[in-house]
Amino acid sequence: MTRDEEIVFSVEGRPRKALVRSPERLAPLPGLLITLAADRRNSLDAEGVRRVADILLAAGHRAASFDLPNHGERANAHGDGLEGMAAAIRAGEDVFADIRETGKAFLNLMTARGLMPTGSALLNGISRGGLAALHLMAFDARALACAVHAPVTDLPTLREFRGMEENPIVRRGNAPALVERLAGRAVFIAIGCADARVSAERCFEFHARLCSVARRNPPVLFALPGATHAKGAGDEIGYQAAAGFLLQRHAEAARNLWPAQHP
Image 1 (cartoon, rainbow, N blue to C red):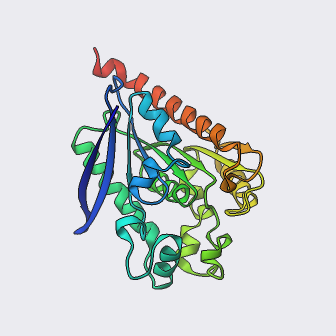
Image 2 (tube, one colour):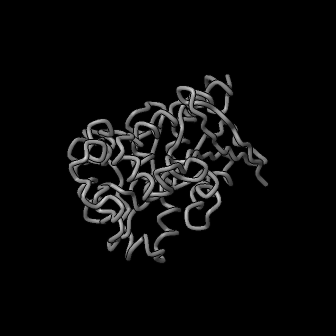
Image 3 (cartoon, helix red, strand yellow):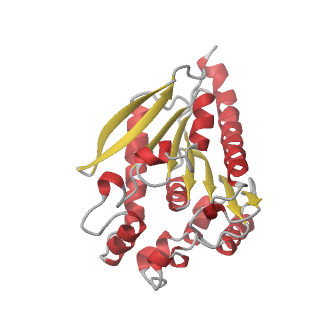
């Protein structure tokens, strides 16, 4: 059994909503997972993307999500989904700065409410949500670990962003632009070797660049057979491996805090 709470907060006066899901029985030091895929409800409920959150909830941790720009209730005149995000960027709106600001404000709220007892959060992202999660990881030290599944690492690879290679927002938003900020951070990447939708090749190149700057704690690459965006049979294994990575990182942080909180 789980309990859902809709939370309203603001980013520079602009309204935002998040969904926080709590298990009936919490772990002694429960972690907070932010999982991103599209809108907040689908990120936690859609069959193809909910697995990591379900596993962490079963282990006694909270899971949360918020709407990505131009998704769910945040659809606007630019449109919905990736097409809407691309149109917003063409109009000069930095959707990635928006994601970072929203994530920061949400973490501030969770900290103030005492729902982040370890002082850090776990991140999980799928496809476009993977790139969003990498941005949160890169710009907020409270992100303890980040797992991404079939992440977008090169936006112009997507048909929705074709021809936008020189757009400055796209160039700063692409995953390679985050490499220096992610150096040495706990990052897990799962992708199918034949994923043409986001380009497995671009993802492997991103992983190699992360490895080249990581003097410690190199990123983990979990390569799956087939095409993850085609709902290949390997998807479930990737989700389980991602959940295991995040649970291990949380356990390490909680172990260090346990003596101080339980003398």
